[in-house]
Image (cartoon, rainbow, N blue to C red; front, side, top):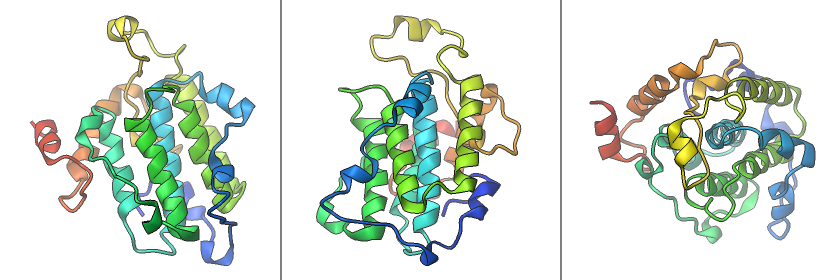
Length: 233
């Protein structure tokens, strides 16, 4: 589990060892690989980076749930590196997935979350709309722990905050985005945006992400050391 906690709501996760989720290796796509029409339409109005950040935040819920079963920190480290990687995805190290090493009801969801993050940073050229990745992460979370009140409440408040600050309509158009040949990314979104109990303003995002980068220890294999040196100067 990442520290500090993303938000107080994470502490409301019930003991996952008292619940079970279906896991059939032949049916895993049906657990997450779809987009509910209403939710997708709403998230598709957000910027690319808003959906990238929402995907990472939802994956923190998934990682917190799975951490009760395993001491493997791969997913936690990948998420941790993903936050400052918004500034430049080259600052992360790609995780190559070997499916046979990630089977079962615990490692399986972990590697799917990693795969969704991979799509966000490395495999979004054919379909650049990040709302699909947000939907995939939300679907996976709901498959693991159902429509948990704490998660659903947090999710709604988080989406509303993003709609207020990081929708394509709410964000001012920058000259870079207007001239961009690729799909405009939008402004940076910090991890702290997903703590509903904390005040947040988009102007804080760059500084907060730099602090996040500074907290990443040398044991994290996915965050580029040179990038961290550049960020600290």
